[in-house]
Length: 66
Image (cartoon, rainbow, N blue to C red; front, top):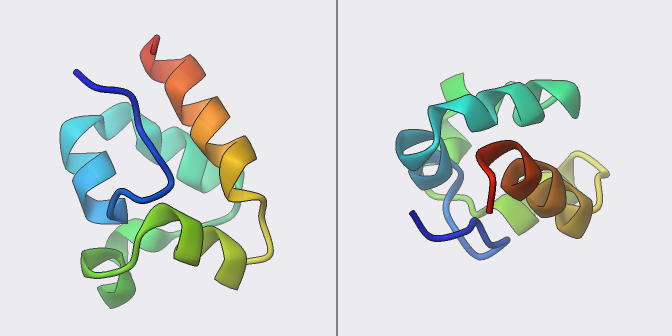
């Protein structure tokens, strides 16, 4: 599968890479159950929660082996 980017939707990331939930939880983002996860991309979600989206992308891609 293609690597994750900050432009990808949160729900799309989790559907393609369920193990990414671990990273969202690491950053304190319970996005999976949030309605915003259906329309918000990773960058927007990270910024709303005060996190660096590039760091999150790097962590997710490291986890999924991309």
